[in-house]
Length: 317
Image: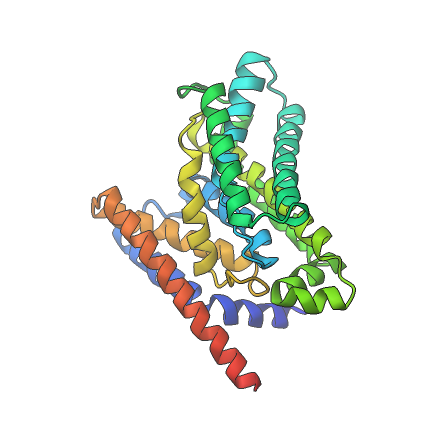
């Protein structure tokens, strides 16, 4: 796809999120310029990285349509956090990134494959299937890790500061490659109209199954970002990213019905939420108000997306 066409698509689907990004960034620069100075960008990206990663991980299954909302992304991040720190690093004494990173990716791909099997082969509604995975992963994580422990390996903690952009770059490159495969067009086609795609010869089951695997792999990378940020293992922190990530996806212009939007929009939506958190924290706002803000953002984003979709359909008639 040509750069101008890609830019036009981003502006059309994530225009509101981009405007909000500019406004929130300006407010943050005014309230706390030192925090957003270039010297602090590494740490700042490290703080935002788990949320951005969770939003990017949530996007592929949503793009595939049929209500493909995976609410197990947050618990999967927490599960990866527990496996890497408690099981592999502290218990087994394994600290090499050449073991821990592949192990995390295998865990993510496996959980994604299980979700994909339940939703595409067994044909359980995605939100129900992933709710089951959510509960199982939460219980297993608490069994492995009843209380927070640490620390994390030094190389992993460095990914929250000096090398904070590296995991996000890995996801970006992976998605860039996926977009150049026939699979991407098939994913967007089944998200828009799976019956028409099936009639055209697209293997709908395979495409949605792979989308769940991609979501699992991206969630495992987000779990490593989370581990880098907190520098330890915490059994309760992963779940907090689930609904915020979905709100970020909706805010970024990805249609929750599937087939429209992209990971750039999801990343912009996540950055918006991070900047909103920063603004509200500057005013010492309570966590309850933050929850209200997340809910309001989600509702506003869904409504704006619905209005935009109707306008597009109306202009096409």
